[in-house]
Image 1: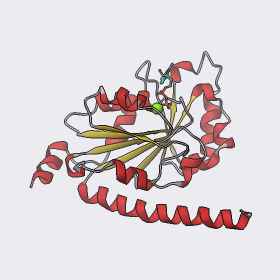
Image 2 (image 1 turned 135 degrees about the vertical axis):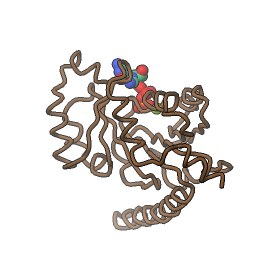
Image 3 (image 1 turned 90 degrees about the vertical axis):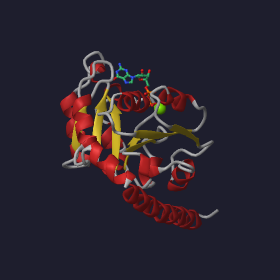
Image 4 (image 1 turned 90 degrees about the horizontal axis):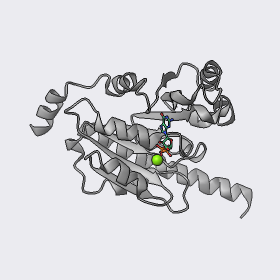
Length: 229
Ligand SMILES: Nc1nc2c(ncn2[C@@H]2O[C@H](COP(=O)(O)OP(=O)(O)O)[C@@H](O)[C@H]2O)c(=O)[nH]1
Ligand SMILES: [Mg+2]
């Protein structure tokens, strides 16, 4: 296949995804569910953070999660321990989630019954950046052991995110990470982006992150009343 043909096929796939993502976003808005996606390299701590967000939400928020990996149901099993509805999307050889996968995974769920839907993308700092999933908020996670320069090497994933979450703060000192440099590099590629530092081990930053995710939401009781009406 010649290069122009490849570029053309890629453009078409992205356009189709955008159309589906727009429809999904409208559905989410109409149902009153806030959708938050997480992208990062493999192992940055997406599932660990979600385990905490699903088990310790501000009750009575109603939460659910979709989780993408090439193979295994491991992460869905981990997240399902929270008691929240969880579905795994196994992508086979595909290195990212797309809007169609999300739409199919939602089949049978009543979105009106949810306040928050979390979507954990496939661990990858490249491909997920191009695919809109209809989410309201995209979190990009970077863990301290990954080093200070990842935002400079993979700018697009930071450019397409709304909030940057620096994870594994407890490992910053043991790994000799210059946190100020990491934050500077994030701000260089995505000026003005909000940055939150967290540690799933110590609990640092989790309240700040929860506050940010729930900001602007009506009181849960009010939202629940309206959805029953
Ligand atoms: N020290 C430390 N380890 C963490 C933290 N968060 C996650 N981990 C560990 O990092 C590894 C990968 O985490 P996981 O949540 O599976 O990453 P994912 O691939 O992004 O979903 C696991 O062994 C976690 O226990 C943290 O805040 N501090
Ligand atoms: Mg995971």
